[in-house]
Length: 97
Image 1 (tube, one colour):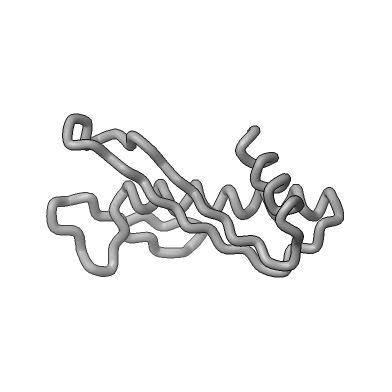
Image 2 (cartoon, one colour; image 1 turned 45 degrees about the horizontal axis):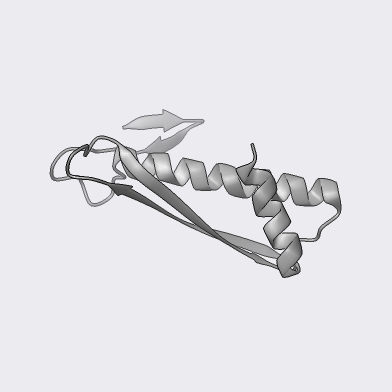
């Protein structure tokens, strides 16, 4: 268990993780997706692009040959309130960092 700014965060990467805990990999992926949302919101605000809502889905894939490493991480952003070209530009700005 970790305590961050007074908030309890339960992490458990054992072979049988607790039901109320995140694995270290899940926490890692969640932090990456959260960072993506924060940066895209920041870029949108700087560019004057009004984002109404945003959601991101993230998936990490590992291989049996290297189970401790992600072979691929895929993120899918859904950005409401902007045009398709604006959404693509925002995501591309994030990807370019």
